[in-house]
Length: 247
Image 1 (cartoon, rainbow, N blue to C red):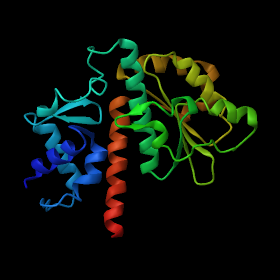
Image 2 (image 1 turned 180 degrees about the horizontal axis):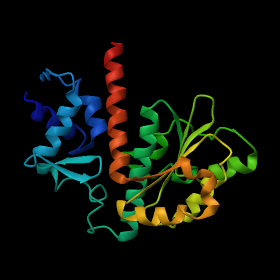
Image 3 (image 1 turned 30 degrees about the vertical axis):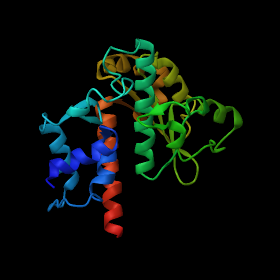
Image 4 (image 1 turned 90 degrees about the vertical axis):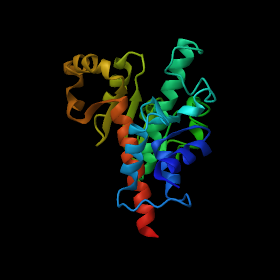
């Protein structure tokens, strides 16, 4: 089996579409394909990016098989304007990037949490509640602050139960709400991420220039969706390589 055939087979087993993380997790276990390289995941990435006759990019971090394009559910192809509504499109994309952020934390060894009201939302083929590792938020501080933390899109907790990162997916909502939530946790050694379309970076820069956000200015970052998915990909590859080295 050739390498590109192996990649196609893995994606086919996932229903014709998969994240790079899913491909990385399964490709090494696939029998009949020899990679002959110390960087098989880089080869996978090159294959999906260059073999446009076989693979196409659905959205950042998610790839599909060309011959499965008509079989992929419309909600997965949700960056296209039809056949779902703009509102449904927004909700589906929000939960997709929420899942990407949660999985990235898992790959890096953090405990992950998303709000209870989001647990039934779908990330590719699973519910967000099936991805996270913390069904209940750790009681890391005063009850009033813990209650406010519960509304964050994604939180990564360290092994001691303290928040390492707060991540807000700002698909179209006002960033001020997320920034004000971050400000509540200025006394913790926590980092903050706004994940949004690259076109909103200027808006982000404008808002954090407000003197009110000075206490967290050095700990807050803007990640566009490509960067978020690149971090997801790298964290997945590192986690899979660690598994291989432990064998």
